[in-house]
Image (cartoon, rainbow, N blue to C red; front, top):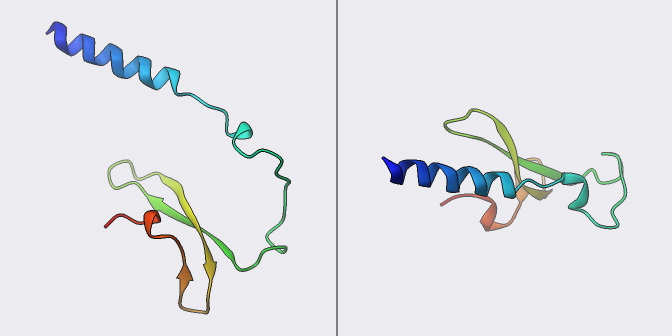
Length: 76
């Protein structure tokens, strides 16, 4: 049982220490509108267990069927 509480404490501490502010992630960026870059898309994913949506990667629209994105954006 002490091993469980030790593991729980380590996981909690790691989560608490990894908090970050999204506003600090892009340095020197500037706001834009969807009209300025109409060929760029955001690739989203839905968590299998959580059911919540999150951003995975970006992509470029090639035509009405295909979007080009990096291989690391997708599992498998």
